[in-house]
Image (cartoon, rainbow, N blue to C red; front, side, top):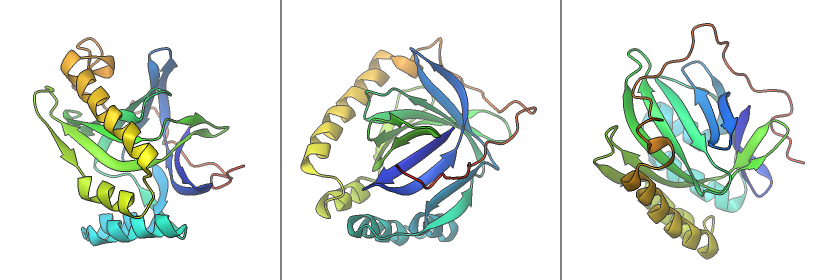
Length: 209
């Protein structure tokens, strides 16, 4: 399936994923090196150059409703993403592509997802929470980018209030070992099955009816 970030009816990113689970316990998708995606040119430039100033330009482009997309191939890590349709975040887990060992948990704050014919649409809200594999330590990430998005109106006051609630909700899940943090659901080691073909982006991926 395809995960898309959509803002004001226009695709900001599109990521090809494989579905591992889709039931009452959540939607779990996977990505690994070689999987294709489309991303805002500013984000791609930031990844290629290592210059975070490009990310700030991307927020300005979002506010203006004027951006372009470039291709990007997923690199270096395996990634599992757990989603529930009523949550304002996904819970992700990064894995070393060579050893399969978990590197960290990564809570990605985003709009609650909406199903589409291709997969689902959401919108990344810039703020992230990085958590150690044993769940004992965490730190907030990209708060400056989130603050910029608030200043230019990409993150409205109404969305901000929901994000503040989602922050506490995510921390509560970590502390109580809820959802994918449950001991019996954690995956300290993961790598894609060698027989799997890479997911791909279908035709019409930029169409948002």
